[in-house]
Image (cartoon, rainbow, N blue to C red; front, side):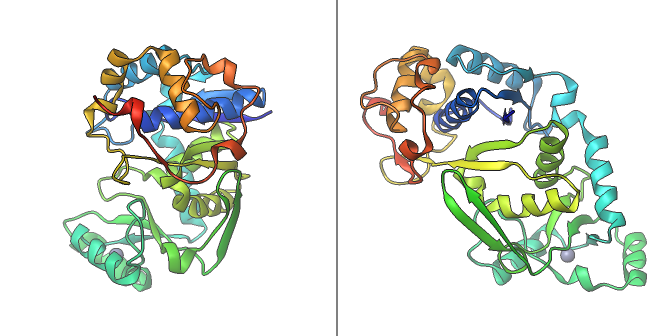
Length: 315
Ligand SMILES: [Zn+2]
């Protein structure tokens, strides 16, 4: 049984890119006759809120993209799942894979630029010298520093490969392409990288469909799955939607968020237009999501980013 998930972050209104990814995740699971879980990724409690999460659910319902399990129940909200992340953290710690990093934010950024200038926006700071501190130095720093440390995992100089169902083969050498990454921030909040792995395993998710911007997080997540003794899911990454100038559609473009889109289109018009962008139908004819299930295939979607023109451009 395929178990997929929607895993939105209620930090703002959904925008066109989120809807595009949600539609493809929904089609992927529905075609396989699987189950879809809705998980709320609200680790960032400063930016996320219950009101925004409720709006998100209402937008998905309006679109006709239903789910089978999850939603606003505490068991499906990351902000309420700290004990699970703590248990995984302790497991990695007892395997000797975790160490405290005493660098400041500025030091981390500088380090990152030096060690891996090609890292993308989702990559975290690369390794630093904190890894090689002696135990006694760590103990000393722990008591001396007023700032609490962040916590990193030691990655091996190992290539992790995956065969993405839409993007094809992708691999990274964890040591050189990624570096030791943070799994718990200095403010005590667990990092996204750890939380998604723990949640996917705990919820039985074996299929992950999400934006291509997260492809470069995938090797380290697969590695974390293995270190924690979980079977990694399979993946399909979705192309990004680009504005006519070739830049990624930004969240700040209000004309592309659900509040504006719902004023300008009906749900079938919006789904139909996105299906046409995805190559699932030749014309942007209004459709219900269920009409697209039978003919859905990743070969039609393709791996190239998609420029959004015409119907979504404000006249
Ligand atoms: Zn450090």
